[in-house]
Length: 185
Image 1 (tube, rainbow, N blue to C red):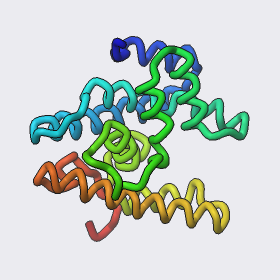
Image 2: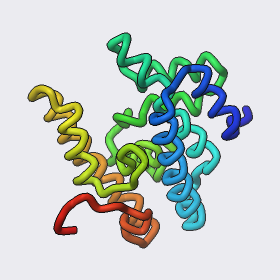
Image 3: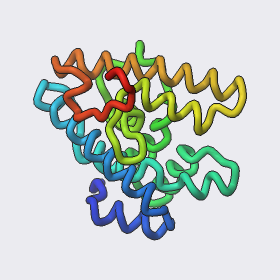
C-alpha cells in the first residue's frame, strides 16, 4: 500500500473543509514529527518517516467535524482514513491523543508515538516545551475536574515519550527548535 504524499494529504484536508489554521498546525506537526523520525532512523530505530509525515499531516482531519458532532476527533479521523484504504495512517490518527497501550509495553518508538509527541510539542504553529503546551491545553479544554485529570495524565505520558525519544537521540528536546513562552525561560 502506498503512503499518501503531501499533495494527496492536503487534498483530503481541503475536501474535508479543514480550516487553514488547523492545516497550518498539521503542517508544523508533520515537520516536527518528520525531523524526529528521520533522526530516530539515523540512530537505528525501525521507523517509517513517510508514514509519520502523512499521519501527522492528517492527524486533525476530522477535528472541526467532530466538534460539531460532539464526537472523538481521533476516532472520527481514523474511520475516515480506514474508509480510504489507509489503515496505518488511520491507526496513527486514532492514537494521536491517547496511545492504545502503556509506553512501558512499547518495544521501540513507533510512528504513533512520534506523531502523538510531535502534536503535543506544537501549539498552533509554534514548537513549545511541554509545560507551555499543557498549560494552554488546560486553559482551552480543562472545563471540569475530569478534563483536568485527563490532561494531567496526558502530560505525564508525554513526558515519558519525550524521555524515551531523546534518550535514543542523545540530544535535548530543545533541539527541535522550541519557542519558550515562560518569562523565566
